[in-house]
Image 1: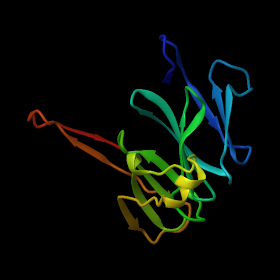
Image 2 (image 1 turned 45 degrees about the horizontal axis):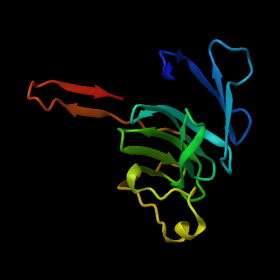
Image 3 (image 1 turned 135 degrees about the vertical axis):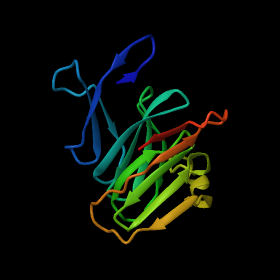
Length: 167
């Protein structure tokens, strides 16, 4: 369930049936989408919901290797970049508020620092100087549609000895 301010919470579902668009459906509505996110050049293969700076987002990956970070309030892509050149994105997810993980059919799993990304939404003159490089990349040797998993382990900084594990 996502929070859209003023105490309004809504369960949203995603449909990827129409190629390069993302249909956002609400649990309380008819079969018509609440809104549609368009902008990928290729078919959308994966989406994940996330929260960054207390705002609701969707991360999406396409068959052209492109990743977009969508702001659900404005319904616009905040970040758009080619993460894996000409290779289908299998999954993309936030690791935390500043990093995201991507996996593609090129056999690589990469971690990206969101603050370092040069979005392809910028002016043409800015695009020429941009080069997006992951902060970590691992060659897996897996080139099919087998997704990897990630595990977050966060140590309690107050010294209580507690560990928070999510996947």
